[in-house]
Each structure stands twice: as structure tokens, then as C-alpha cells.
Length: 166
Image: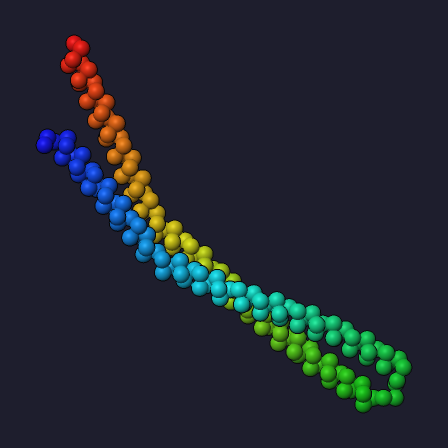
């Protein structure tokens, strides 16, 4: 076994180790991908809850407009019914308070959604940063591996061509 055969054998061992160890190292990213899937599953109910709150908010606004119209009609038609007017005003105030509470809850949910999206982006960045050295190592190994064999066979051919024909 000469020096070139040993080098070829070493390169084959390194290639075999890389083909075995690289998928095993990529399996270490599996918990991060599962966490990403869990975050996506958490975002879906939050979006549904957000849509439900928006629907309730629209319903409350419509109800508020109807109550205001009713209040105006009562003011125009029934000036003597002050008790009913006070009750409607109280209901209007309660609806306004409920509307404010729903708006606060909606803002909190939006903030939570933004934080979860930021966490999702950070996990994607972490996955990219964790896989970048492996990709660079793979590129480095295969680049020098093929360059080495290109020059090796080129000089081998040149040597035997020169030896046999000159």
C-alpha cells in the first residue's frame, strides 16, 4: 500500500464518517422543529380567539349604535320617560365599559401574538445558525476532496503519458 492508497482510504473513511454523523447532528435540530410546530399550534387558537373577539367587538358596536338610535328616538318621542332614559344610559355605559375591556383584551392578545411570532423568528434564526457550520463543513470537505482527486488523477495521467510516450 503506497502513500496515495492510504490517503484515498483516509478520505473514504472521512466521507463515511460525514455521511453517518451529519444526519445524526441534524437530528439534534428535531426538538427545535418540534418546538416550532408547537408554537404554530399555539398561534392558531390565538388567531381564532382574536377573530372571535373582533366579531364580538363588531356586535357590541352595532348594539351600541342601535342603543344610541333608540336613545335618540326616545328623546324625541318620549320626553316624559326619564326613568327609561336613565336605564338606557346605564346600559350604554355598561356596554362602553365592556367595549373598553374587550379592546384591552384584544390589545393584550395582539401583544402575545407578536411575542410568539418573535419567538418563532428567533427559533428559525437559531436553526439556521445551528445548521450553518455543518453546511460550511460539508462544502469545505467536498470542495477540497474533489480538488484533491482532480489534481491527483491529472498528475497521474500526465506522469504515465510522459513515461510511455517519451
